[in-house]
Image (cartoon, rainbow, N blue to C red; front, side, top):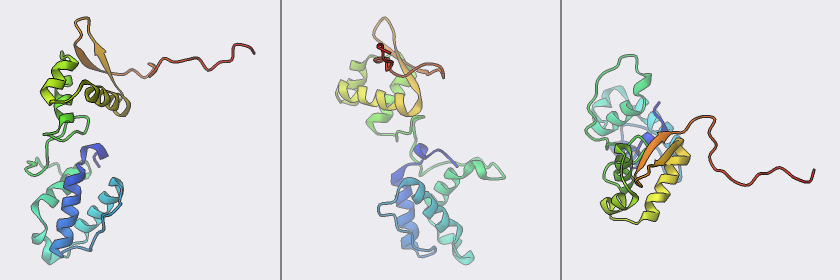
Amino acid sequence: MRELNQIPDIVLRKCIRAMNESGVAPIGKIVTLKKPDMIKVFAYQIEHVEKGKKWKIPEYAVELYNFIFEDEAEEKIPLRYRYMPKMSPFGSREGTQAYIIDEMFLKGGVTLAEVAQACNTTIRRIKNHMNSVRVKHNKKFVRGSDGRYYIRDRRENEKGKVGRSTTNLFE
């Protein structure tokens, strides 16, 4: 199964609603469900369609199911994802500010002002996104001497923040 950040919420909800409306699968409720639970509901719906009604399953629902469980298939079939939005390596959907920020930093050699101008947003928003990528994906943003940023993988032995020591000096 793919990582959760690679599966778009919007498409997952759309597929569950389509399966509910088509009437070929058991009704799945998606109100207040978290993403792992929504994936279980969606997989249950797809796997429990009656044999004579498989042709009624929406094409994008089949495509999403194949996208989610692609690594578990016995036979690897090259698929074209027509309905799946393109995703960045950090889980941002194409057409969003976060996707543009990710692509610019992956290309490397950009300043915060350039990224903010390309996204039509503030530098504070860029820094918040950088922090999110740093924490969730264990990446490090390296600033060159010319003020341009690059993304690097963080080493295992490297610490996150340098802060105050927690040792007691008076013991």
